[in-house]
Length: 263
Image (cartoon, rainbow, N blue to C red):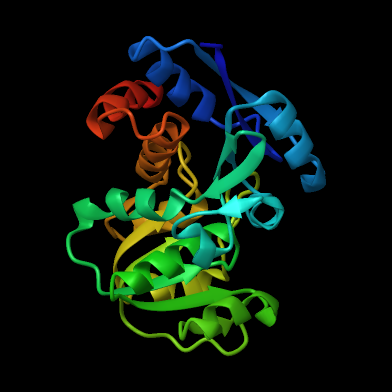
């Protein structure tokens, strides 16, 4: 059996620890495979690059929605989300999945019961979370800088606001899915509004990992229980890895090895 090749497509991609996670799993499970990073500036190059060189891939910002549109087939919850983070090369066809949503849900289990969620941002990750939260019977609200990406959520009967018409409510969880704080020192929304939101929620989560973003810094300042995106990254990675291998492994075994990447 030939050695399998996997990668992560993104821009930027240098900061990603997915190669480390997957390599720990490959080595721990004694598999013949490799996992690399691939910087892709033009999303249109993904299908050719992928199908010519890889058996499986993960997709990170800003290409999740573009990759969805270019798949030969999309399976599972990704069909509703309209964004993919995992690609499988199935006999020369590009098959797309989304493990972000299920990975995030698992990462939030430590917070206990969540009924009412506010999502900041309206990109691929926000869509993934909006769909899965709605499927789980939660009340979901989305807040984005502009109105031009909110139609997706409104069609799902998800409350969606721009900064101009936002109406504050009470939440169990506020999730930052924007890139604010990833490369610059900024909050996802004006500080006074962020403080008001934090005063009306029980928990905060940022999908950015291995960094105390301004969002998490403010949550800490206000003594609000919070977590970064490390667990989400871990669990979506476990699910993606198992898809690479047709769900041949116990999730607990993959998790055990992947966790080493965060030490």
